[in-house]
Image 1 (tube, rainbow, N blue to C red):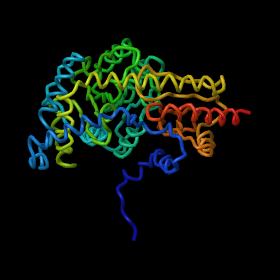
Image 2 (spheres, helix red, strand yellow):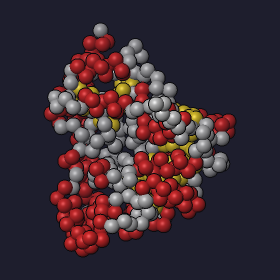
Image 3 (cartoon, rainbow, N blue to C red):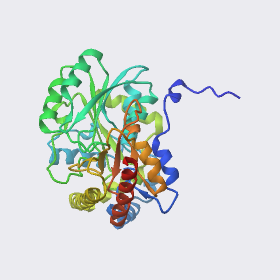
Image 4 (cartoon, rainbow, N blue to C red):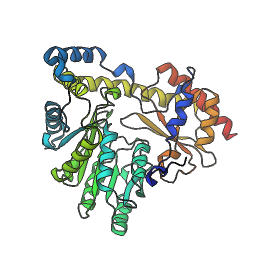
Length: 393
């Protein structure tokens, strides 16, 4: 029998992460691959207490169906935090709870994209976003990142020439590069974008994980009617609970709400209640501070190991927050070649190719420093350094 799949499915390739997961079955494998939070950061006991409390308070009712838009007190908590911490005035009525921010991304794409509509993305960009936009048959335009963020001059030219529907960006500790937009870039970006009929997706899963600097201005503050701001508890509380959100102006919110209703009716009500109870019973900022301290130390340990074991002509770009380091090899060497040799030495990472629209054979790759033990960071970087040196001979 011939299965008549939709055209859009054929455009979506399996993520390279699927390839990596095959190797992670080996218990001796050291992984610097996925964007996993460190389990030591999970507030296990506090979540247990929150879970018991919500069952004690509401019993059977928390196991029932709930509202599509999400638990109102949780949305109010998110709204209040944006106001108190970021000076962002986002009414809770404009916050839609989703099953991870990845689902929010899917709803945005579903609401805006017809086949061959244009999306501007950073280069490199988050591979999950590239998959999502591909599934709705989008055409891509890429704009290079530099040390201060997106190249605003190139962005302006592409906006003039191509009239895209969406711009997708990660301004804080970008995945995969670790780059953060400077304040000057954020202001310049907003000055340019406000002249065009385009929607900006501001993906911000890492913004609370800063190491050496204070929080930066959200683009939602500068472009309130053009920015869809996405957030998540996956990197700060637990990815297993799958809770994210999207902030959208009312006219867009209605479309996203309809997509949510048609997709899964609502995100897990129980998980929302547990997260909310945890947030009101504990000091969330203290928890975030502990994660920052942990990740700052792990990044330093990895940078020190790289300094000791990598050849001098390998460039590493430290980030001032987040979970990743971006590594660039000499032009003569491919990160895919390094990957398959590294696997033999029991260490894995993500080659740069999946983060590029054209899946080019790049000499860059991404390292995750948040999830590995201190011992494995030292051991894994030493192995990887050995592989790179052998390839450069």
